[in-house]
Length: 232
Figure (cartoon, rainbow, N blue to C red):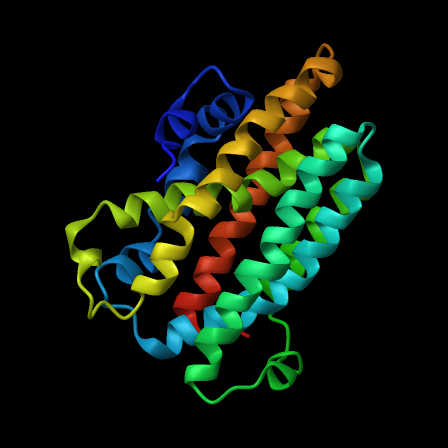
């Protein structure tokens, strides 16, 4: 497996600085009760199913945001970086969600008809708004809590001995985000933020990026709340 743990914890990266500036929100996100109960297998299946159904709808909108990142990119390198993540979402993450839901007898056509929860709409529309209103760095920062955060959470859960049991009900989900392919996506997202910052970090810019990062992380917390409380 690719070692991304150091990338996640390096305080000198832009991601590391944003995470430190939003330490309370980041901790509440990565150590949310939903995440803890998913890890120790005490999360009821109905909560996980509700979350997964909403996350399927989220990924459709999230894909559009990454498509916007391709459009707003100012170099071929930036376009390729955004396209790599977009491809991972469309071919791997969405497929995982479809596979899980198929176990419950839910077809993809039915998944597309599920009502989108308010927390879902709030998050995805915020990310798209930041991408439309700002530049590509604003958009990548708004995307970072999800793209990088799931890598952090996946790795954290995978290192817990409780999740290594073959009978763990959510092992496939954990393995997907702790796996080499997704960890590579998360690691590259950390590096790409630094590359974007080289040409776009002017005086006073950091605080506005902190605001973006904090809001996106807060909306991630709301997404976990939605799954935990079965809100729709």
